[in-house]
Every structure is written in C-alpha cells, then in structure tokens.
Image (cartoon, rainbow, N blue to C red):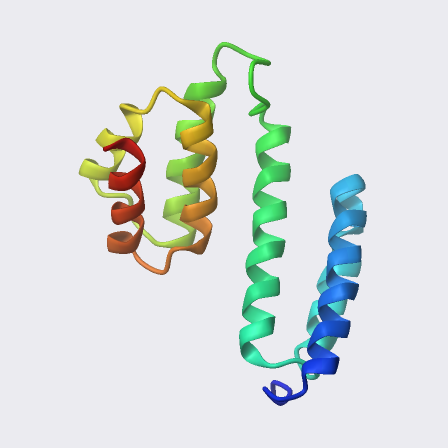
Amino acid sequence: MYGQDDDLENNEFIREIMEFELEVFKKDPKQEMLLAATLIVANKIIDKKTFDQLWKDIKMVAVLEYAREKGYDEGKKDGALSNAKQMLEEIIEETIGVVPGYIQEKIQQISNQTTLKGLLRQAIRCNDINEFNQKLTLAVG
C-alpha cells in the first residue's frame, strides 16, 4: 500500500504539498478535507515513514487549532493554565490510552505554560505511557 522507501523524489514532493496544505489549513481549518484527501492519495505514493511523519504533523496542527479554539493562547484567560492541563490529559487519553493517576498528579503540579505546550507536543508523538512519563519527568524534574 505504501510507496517505495527509495522513492525520495516522490516523498519530498508529497511533503512539500502537505506542508503547503498545512499552511492553508492553519489559516482556514475548513480546508481539513483537502488535507485528508491528499494524505489518502499520498498513502499509495510515499513510504510508511514519510506518511507517519506527515500524519504526526497534521495531528499537531489539529491539536494546536483545537487548543486555540478552547482559549489556550497564553495570557488570554486566567484559566488558560487549567485548560492546558485538562487538554494535555485529554490528548494523552486519546493518543496513548488511560491517564494513570500519577501522571495526572505530575501534570497538575506544572505551573509553566511553555512546559505544558511542549508536553502537548510530546503527548502526540509518544507511543506509550512510559515514553510520555519519561518526557514528563524531564520537563518537571
């Protein structure tokens, strides 16, 4: 189903198209179907590694857009920190699975929005709860 790993020219071409469409999507989230359609077609042209990376990039943009919709912008609301913590827990639950209590406790102790923003990205990229816990431990000490 995936293209050939050695077809670097197609991989790079598709990556450029997807980057352009991601920029369009950032400006107009209604264009998400265009992005999805291109990714579906690209699946037959590009290798699995490139496809997986593009998928992670798309998820990141979608999560950040969702965060903006929920009022995550730094300094906009007094509850932004609380919203970010809740969102982080929701992302972990969606991408990794159930959020253990010890992870929830560590997240609730975070008081820096920049740290939370970095952890949001990590939650999207991590493959399991142990990998995320390592990132969380590094972030909060």
